Image (cartoon, rainbow over all chains, first blue to last red; front, top):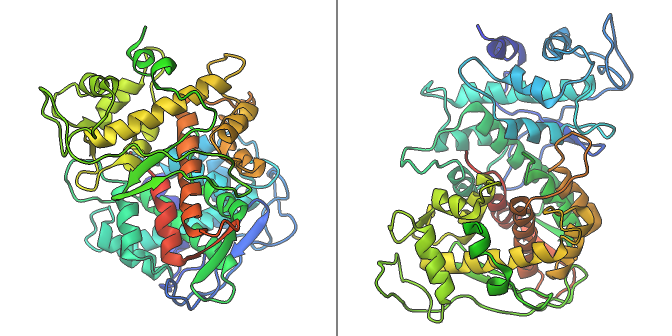
Length: 243
Length: 243
């Protein structure tokens, strides 16, 4: 059993309900998924992964340590992932942890995750708090991925992706999904199928942008207004990643 | 002299005026830069690179051929780039043409350009019309890049980027630029500087998103409303690229 499957085994992390909570911290703000009856979202439950204060126990954790109530499994995962025992997780450590023997987790997705979950003090490394939030989020995406990969191909196709996103509360329009998934077309003419890393990339982008839109659509009208600076500041973080 | 510098020599492609036109064809629609007196844009001139009909002359061009009036330099470039003489340019041919001996043009940027300039019939290859538009656009970005690389370092830093974008009519807020350029931070602690391919990536993303925003802000108020589907459909094309 690979490290990847050990730390992501659905029985320990995946929720049992089809509607999944999700939150991430970006630039110091916390976004939580709330019930949103718009045409692009259905039932979801609110849940916060954040707490206050510190934890510890024989390990020098960066920043403020783990939130109270953090699962011992998460703390154990942190210690396994933090190979240089720095108390922080860098992108290489995260990539190693997410890669299995036969499949490398794409660095592009690692960097997107690092960026979305970064703490305000250190954008290049995750502390325990950020790691706990990211790990929980990834565990949930893993659970969704495995549940919706119905033909057990180890990959998610267009229809499975659509259903999986719908299962998380993202009723993404088919036209949007078509454009999104076309980006993974390798030109071979084969059906487009997503590995777990590409699936996570799609998921966090769609979820993140939807959350941002919802913040501006407080009346649940399905329409939101942005000024130019807001619009650009909202979109850019999901775009280019360095190489 | 490399092929790269030959085909991009500023004397043949770069405009002399500091305000640069720009247009691209996406999903069958043509967007042209128009004068836009908002707080994020200053003087620009409208210019179209598109015509109707066909051209030819001893070469089997894909789709409808070059627009009338296409510069012989562009036609010659097309013939040099189209190494397999298919009448179309694929991403490998484009990457080869844009890479110099000492610097490979990143495939990520090649794919973004292919996507933004694609024709509706064949999203994986450029015909002569699309190539002419892309080539003209790239020649202009090259001219801007060389003009604003004031210290002749061969790279563009934050202040040069800001000035260069302003020079094209994009008065991008500093906060947005900070986030954008932070994506190119390699974590070494060195000052972030952009090669030409990253500069083009930043430029076409900012320009493209700004154009999209302006389409929805016809009254030049600096604020635009989107419904959720529009918002997602607008942003997604600039996001993930396949690998």
